[in-house]
Each structure stands twice: as C-alpha cells, then as structure tokens.
Image 1 (cartoon, rainbow, N blue to C red):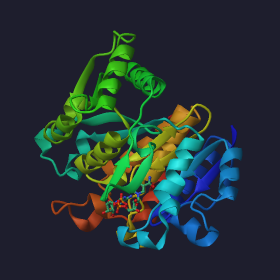
Image 2 (cartoon, rainbow, N blue to C red):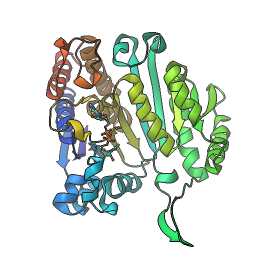
Image 3 (cartoon, helix red, strand yellow):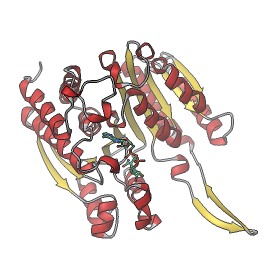
Image 4 (spheres, protein in one colour):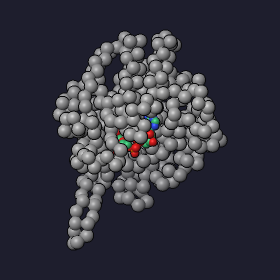
Length: 369
Ligand code: NAD
C-alpha cells in the first residue's frame, strides 16, 4: 500500500513519543512492504510561536493532501497559556478546527487492561477481575465544545455562556458507528447520557434508543453520566464492550478510564471522519515530564496501531503492533507512570527503550505468525 501521512508532532512530550511511533511505523512499512511518504508540519503552541498560528495554512495544505494524519498532543502548562491569545490557543485554534475540517465525528478510545497487567491499576485486583476491555466511543464534532461561546455583560452582570447543540444527524451517525462496533465485537453497548437534566441529554437518549431498535441482537443499556463515573471505579468490567458518549462527557470519562487502568499514557485514540481520519493520544502534552525521555509512548504507538486498524484497514499490521506492546508489558517492563510502590525498579524503561523494544518484537516475528 502507498500512502501519504501528515505528521503533526505537537508540543511537550509530543515530539519524543512521536519519534517512537514513527520508528514503529517504519518497521511495519518495511516488514509488510508498504510505502509511506511522511510529511512533517507544525501544529499546536510551538506552531503559534514559530508561524504565528497553531494551525498554519501550510499545515492545512499538508493535511488536505495527506491520506491520513498522525497527531501528537498539543498545549502548554496552564500557567503558560496566557502567553497565547485566546483564539490562538491550541484547543480553540488547532484541535477543534482540525476536527471540524475533516468532520472526524467518531473518536475511538480503547481502554484495555488484561488480567496479567492488573498491577498497573490503582484499583484492587479483585475489581479488575478477568481484565478491562472497553471501547469508548466519543462524539467528537458536536455538543458544547462546538457551540457559540459568549462572555459578556448584561444589566450590570458579567456572564459567560456555552451553547450545547446536537442535531439528529450528529447523534444518529455516531450511534450507528457504536452499534456496528458492538456487533463486530459481539459485545454489549452502554449509552451514557444526562437525560434527567439536559434537553440535549433527553434528545441524545431518544435518538440512540431509536437506533438501538435497528440492532435487536446487541444487548443495550443506558446509564446517567454521574452514575457511569461512579460505576467505572467500583465495577469497571461491567462495561466491557462498547460505551458511547457525547463530546464533553466522553472527554472527561475517558481520562478517568486512563486513571483506572493506571495512566493516561495507556490511552491511544483514532478520530474517524467520512473522508479523512487522524489518530492521536487521548492525553495532553504532559509539560511536567516533557523532554525527560520518561513519557509512556504506548498512547502514540497504540494510535499508530489504530491507524492501521481503523483508517487503513490493515488488521494484521495492527495486531502485530498490539501484540508486541503487550509482550513487553508481560515481560514486566514498564515506564515510570505505570510504576507503583509495589513494583521494583529493575524493569523500568524509558521512552526510547520502549519504542526500540516494540520495533525489535515486530522484526523478530514473521508475517502471518
Ligand atoms: P495531560 O494529559 O497532559 O497530563 C496529565 C497527567 O498525565 C500528567 O501528570 C502527565 O505527566 C501524565 N501523562 C500524560 N500523558 C502521559 C504519557 N504519555 N506518559 C506518562 N504520563 C503521561 O494534562 P494537562 O497537564 O492537564 O494538560 C497539558 C496540556 O495539554 C494543556 O495545555 C491541555 O490543554 C492540553 N491537552 C491537549 C490535548 C490534545 O492534544 N488532544 C488533550 C488534553 C489536554
């Protein structure tokens, strides 16, 4: 297969975890005889400082011409954000416009913790049971993040307002994606909502339940988002299967899922649109550990696995990456974020070591084995 891939390294730990992901991409390219043309382009806070925009025109052009995009995390530490005008901050000026430009409405966030890796989780072993395997699907281009944002003064009172809007088309299409995934996995679907308070919550529930009628073979349940947050901690495995969220609730609960399995560094994602898709880690730029070669690159390497699985429909390549990563964990190696006081430091590895080991595993195994 021949593909052009745009590479947006981003900020903070972005360049260092991207470097490992590209090593892995190149190992797969060689082994499976693909040809990938990689084009690097500036994106995020660093792009604002060098180019005057977090999503410069030349980057838009590179992304438009690419078949798929691999994006690293963007953003600065909260206390540095004031160095950038509001409209040029990475979320409002880069991430949301990227998502809107390619209408990447379905965000896949796999939350996987096999039973053998229970010790990564801060939860008790009995709570993890036979392991966590939830595919979280988050609506990514609608809801409150994309509604009007107003800050103003009326009758002497300062106020701020964010509009939350969902159309039937917005909800229906992501619900169909979620039910199709549940069917592929022969799994149940849990629909998360806030129908007891919000008009958009009632609307979300109504449309998803209408779609559910077309999938009578899929076990379906709905749960209020606040209860879902609680249940995810006390009994996460009850959600093994697919969970569906609207945009903001999915943003928050998928980070919680990262905490439950042990680290945001274990959270890759794919953002799928009708014509163009991109992959990115679910976490931010982790400024607290940037440049120290200690970040967990699983989220970025796993995003490349998702690129093969969801964007290029090359499942064998994806499986090769996933099994290489999990073998490394099963051998006891881990990055610092996964290390609890109950672990010994002997098998502590750094970011580049992790990437090298994944490449070595990919090279060791033969195609089709
Ligand atoms: P963060 O997700 O960057 O980090 C939260 C915590 O998780 C930190 O302790 C960090 O060290 C740790 N962490 C995250 N990724 C890790 C990894 N791969 N390996 C090991 N540890 C990891 O959240 P934050 O600090 O609140 O945000 C930093 C910046 O990122 C902000 O500017 C924020 O707006 C931005 N952000 C960007 C995205 C995105 O690019 N899609 C998403 C979320 C936040």
